[in-house]
Length: 327
Image 1: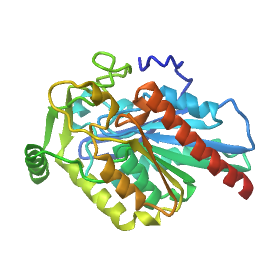
Image 2 (image 1 turned 45 degrees about the vertical axis):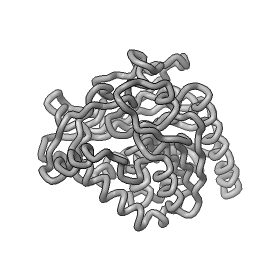
Image 3 (image 1 turned 180 degrees about the vertical axis):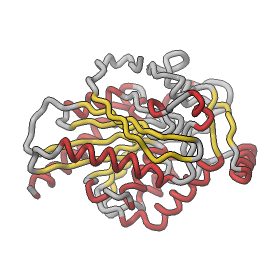
Image 4 (image 1 turned 90 degrees about the vertical axis):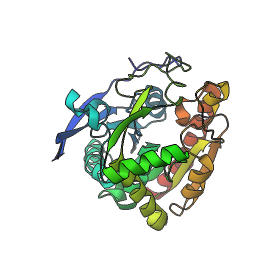
């Protein structure tokens, strides 16, 4: 069960499975969850959540907040991730990809599905919400995805916009995996364990879908991320929709011994670096740093995540005022 001490009831989801283009490892699919808001409006509003690496969608409290704010909520488990793993034989290839643009297929199918839900409305507005590598994927789609013109807002939760800070040993390992197109299980560090109820956190997610002890990494994925990051650095200013960037106010590199401050910082990305990169995206970027937030700001301790929700919905409310003036 995916729950937290926030005691959010799990929303009622409709599930749609997309059959995707197969690759060298066999068939692919993506899984789209959809929860409907009970708040009615002449303007159809919806958000599509895109998870990060070593991750899947389980953040039901985010869904509940969007439903209460009048948005239909969609979340997609990308190919070879979470609910979209076809069989145990695919486990060694979790999150495997050679080009971040491959995810255009399932994101476009999700947006087509969202458009069908909006057919009864005179006007519609869609937002993409991406976390970590999902933020990189969402940004890339907003730049060049086939249905990018349907995206009216881009929300980035600690997006992986620049290459990870690495120790010398980690750099050697990554370069070796890239050179050999190899894959390897590595020690996951404290990020996942700082979140899960079995260790230091409050979130009871499925550790078979989001492992907290070891993580499978692929040289091809590092290469794909680098190419996507370069593409955004060169062309990201062409993103048309307004962008909200959110992250922790501080990063730390963790060691093997737990320290309580690990629960209040980004343990994955250098927030100063990604903040600078985000400022170069699009023409309308809002930067919001959340004090004492974790890498996934919406999994932070309650005071920090409440600040994050307040920042996000205040920004959306401002956008909606503009949207209503245009209708």
